[in-house]
Length: 210
Image (cartoon, rainbow, N blue to C red; front, top):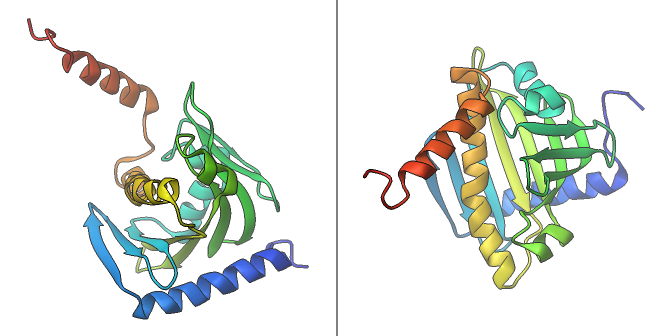
């Protein structure tokens, strides 16, 4: 097997399902909204899924590195990152005092596709345990531009699943906007972000302006 190609039989089935879902989405009842630079599409029938699209001002290899190395992920997604590019390897991000986010790697094609068995945030324990499938696709979109698409499927029925769906519709859009910002303004300075957040929190408390 080509060392640069990692697609096990299970992942082939997943990718087949993703392709079928994409075709179904073309005729499904869906709604789209732009959240800053990211287009978010919610599709509830016939297959419940979330789709995100953003054009990033960077080459495909730059974007790929931002997804597939510890240092790269830490420039836009979270201050702590652990990426092990192997089947079943960790793709995890984290903030101090919180459970890690991300998931495990199911398949990849260099500079084209990365599939993750994705965990939900810890406030959705059932969804976090059972997980969804997140398929990132990367394609050139002009000179030094890359289109990043994320399809997330594997959603089930139930109140917790519905709440996680709505939460991640916004949360994943925010993350992809952070990816965009990373390539327009440079790597995120987490120390500055944390200090500003703490300052904003203090100033918003009653009596802080006295």
